[in-house]
Image (cartoon, rainbow, N blue to C red; front, side):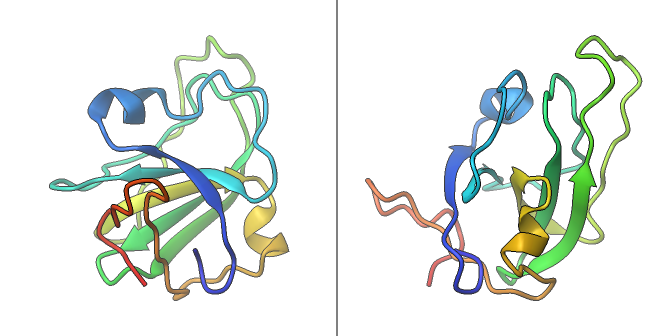
Length: 130
């Protein structure tokens, strides 16, 4: 949840899951995303390796608020591209939420918005709870 917006997100919490991310997926429905959760370390940077569609990248700070947004990040021209731009958090982040390009604006998400997330099955909060 970001502010009053609910986003259903797949969680990537292991190094292997974070490495793959959304690579190879053909699209992401509106209101869906991927949460990159870091329990003990911090995200160093994100790239668009293997991406087939554009994204908005939302950086989540230690206070469980949005601390940075990079909108409309385009996929590489080719899935075989080796020279990829790396997107870096503006300051220390505990997580990243990737949503479809344009969704940040469409959902009215702004820097400073409160973030809360939990696994609906296990109720695990991944560090930010309501």
